[in-house]
Length: 93
Length: 177
Length: 256
Image (cartoon, rainbow over all chains, first blue to last red; front, side, top):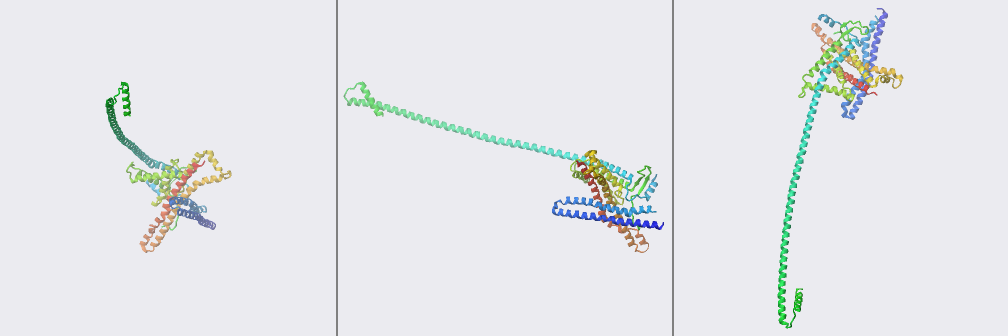
């Protein structure tokens, strides 16, 4: 293995790690969104306590849908951590 | 192929990629899903829906029967009530009829009695009148005779029959008046 | 206990060479085997629940089965507003049950079939075909194709993209959530194994060597995190997948 190959592998691994870290920034969005959703739901329940069940189930559904982007980020991060390095290592042999 | 081969397969350390879509796995999973749908339909939904439908029919039948029985009871009740009302009115009719009849009878009796009384009274009055007339006539005759006798005796003067009679009648009419 | 942590895909138990160019070899993976186990479990449960049904004096088992059927009926009817989609009820129920059991089967140590993108992709493709066929049935082929050019013709590529994004997002959402559960469970077990081996390795001699191989700390804590990562997100994602299926199909039938 030449020094050049070693360098390339190092850069690839570093890129994967940094990318995974960046991908998990996507968790901010759903966090804020779900917080807003829950706070609004709580307000609604406070105003109309008789609608608690409806509001809760709808809120959970909305939260789960809003979480999608976070999950995308998470999957991307996983890919970069566990799948991409292997791919690059194979490629850079 | 035998157990050993299978075990060898099971022991193999080959793995799929973490995030990948295997075409054959995809096709198999689609088939699996449809098989699962079919199985669930056959073993869960069909028997349960059948039994639910049967039970609903049973309940509907029971409700229908109950409603019919209630209607019958209602009609019977109506019938009884109407017959009871009829009986009441009939009784009232009978009573009123009897009362009317009694009234009529009583009225008739009173009337008859009154009539009889009136008759009796009238007869009595007529008798009295007749007796009175008779008495008066007798009295007239008596008085006429008496008067003639008296006159004949008192007035010596001959009086012809006609004058005589006229005189008496005048007298009587004067007395009668 | 391995010192390195890695998440691997489903194991391949057998490979059948077919020679078909694009599809490649048939891999009998862990996913398929566990899916068959799941199907066996569900079918066995159905047969068990519907054994000797009665009209009156029903057993608890039958009451439970009837409750499940009623729940399925109500779920589809409430979300589509009517009995127009009664044909969908077995499909949605099968999807939901398969999804829940697949997600929760990781609790007994098997690898969830839903932690393989192929499974969700298969479901999402079926749902996508159903949505599209409902749309074509409602509007006709011309109306369906014309729907892409609304509001203006320039939007066509974006409309096609958003149409294609539906199955992709459905599949990736479910897959990502389950995979995250798998990864986090794996991480927790790995970390607890390391911790217990480090802790018990302090005991000198053969006893310490033996005890340090047993991840004794792995008892307890994963059960607590499993409540969220396996139970909650497993049931939630199954519910959302079915909810979205029903709502997309109902919407497809409504568009004039």
